[in-house]
Amino acid sequence: MKGALQFAFAGVVGLVLGAIVHLAAVFGIPELGDRDAYSRFSPLSRESAAHLLTDADRAGAAPALRDPAVATSVCAFDLAEGPVHVGVSVPGGFASVSVHRPGGGVIYAVTDRAAQRGAIDITLMTQDQLDEILAEDETGEPTQDLRVVSPVTRGLVVVRALAALPSLRERAEGIASTATCKPLRAVDGG
Image (cartoon, rainbow, N blue to C red; front, top):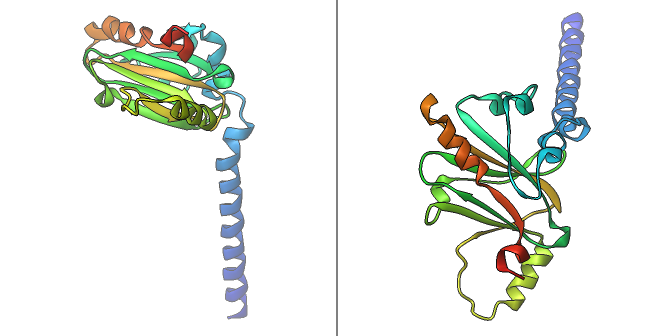
């Protein structure tokens, strides 16, 4: 009986230690890894426009980015100079926009179901920038764009468009490549 209790105790201790190691690995990988979406794809991004990922860009990427039925584009943003407007034309079919932080993790994601007048319009900003915009707003009118408060100043926008059939691949690439990430002052003309 004593041997069985010692064996059970050792088993429980082993399970607890295994769970601790597992949790540490799961939560530590995004922070320790250097191949997250931001570090891998932000160098490809051009200022104010999305970069359509080619098969060569996606080599070695996560399986979700290697799907041949999905056209993917990326653009990096930096909120240090002010809010950034993300715009994507979505004339039909599935499309999504997700905002990623450096080191991994999604800040915000939306699909074509949130599109208004055939476009997804998102304004990314820090909390201080939102407070400033609200303080300057004299009309009090609701905006047509989605306002997303980012906890980080730099990140990556990923746009995906589905080609339901192989013959629609070119159309999906056209949708993904229309994405823009412009400083808000450039959109407003200021």
